[in-house]
Length: 223
Image (cartoon, rainbow, N blue to C red; front, side, top):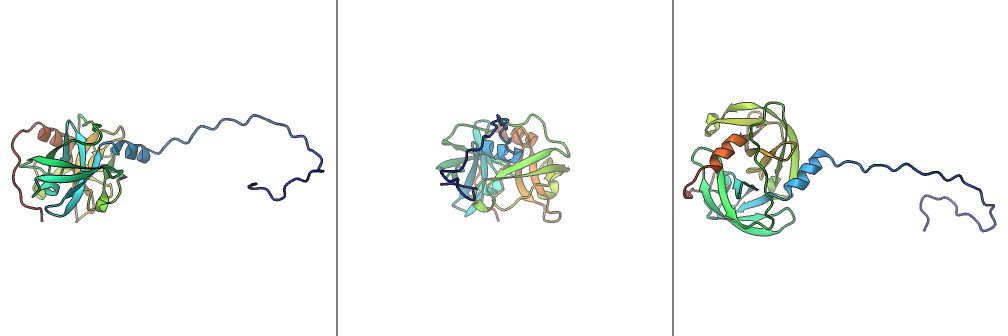
């Protein structure tokens, strides 16, 4: 089958010599940074479902555990998690933070790949990506920037929190906030309804929580 030709040559047509030259080898188009972040996030970011409270959110593996928001895991001893390609598994809620919107879970994930936690918090203007499951749908990444740092007290949290320009939807709660090298620099937990900006707890807050120990608290479903 011919493609892109108007009329095929006839048998008695004179042959026309053609000078053959070597075409330059074209380099493959480099994948976009968004796509690079998405491909990496597939290995450690999970859809989270709280069947007890009928909530969906996002969770991710880091430092030998799985992290989500406290309000996503509240009211459930067990959480249903799923990989980007639909491999389901269960996780047990092991610890809720007293002062921040964070919860820890134990699970045997299908892949033992986990994210790396950044050693410092991002500064204003830093390019960041949110990797999560908006509306409980497919894994997506959205790019934006850190707008600044504000006191978390107005949102009932201890310490400073990050304002980000990344688009946040229901289901993004618990999503990791990633910098260009894929390290986790924060954990998304809400949207500021007044400004529309996303809100995230910085890496330093997550590191402090990872250093905590204790028993899981029995919390009611988030309202």
